[in-house]
Length: 251
Ligand code: FPP
Image (cartoon, rainbow, N blue to C red; front, side, top):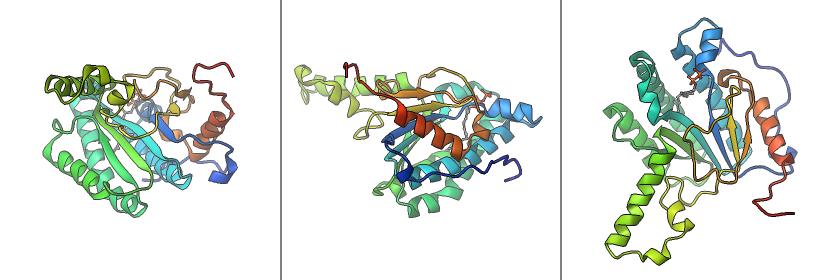
């Protein structure tokens, strides 16, 4: 790969360049299909180029020492795409973990898979379980990769787990709080999302991190995900730093 890199030469920022950085960034990597169409390529190539962007964004997030990055790689609805496209995404999942795991582990990145893994083909499932196992004790960036993920399904899962504990007498109904719920999400013990970025100009949440985004700042850069550069990311992070967050209060 590396042929489609219309990268510009703006400087890349370091942690010291930011007055304020988010603790948790979430990204909807949208626009791979449109990018492929624009370049008269098949959609699989759009996703492949999207993975190239992803590698750079993960690296930069780690360099900036941001605590958590959550990326939407495959939603519960994505199974409804054509057989070829789903197959291409499955292959990319394998390729990504096989090629990145050494570097990510070396960088002390902890990988978590958000979503139900059981429905994936065995090869993919094995690679996901192994990535989580291998990096489970790492203490650097937490990289949440949403695969077969849906925000509502995540809430139903948490609600069932609470209901079960109440039914078993392990938890009193009066003790159920927001904390009880957030402790049972895939993102337990992580900070809420501070900044949500969706590329390609679409302005929707699409069932992503519904609970965790309660007070998130949203940015919708128009650029398609394969064209999203580290500099575009820096600009989003700078824009985040300029936002006044009130959390419902009057400051
Ligand atoms: C949205 O673009 C993107 C996706 C549905 C998949 C994103 C997946 C990757 C970048 C690669 C897989 C990830 C890993 C971790 C290996 P779209 O196809 O909906 O774009 P469009 O709206 O222009 O059609």
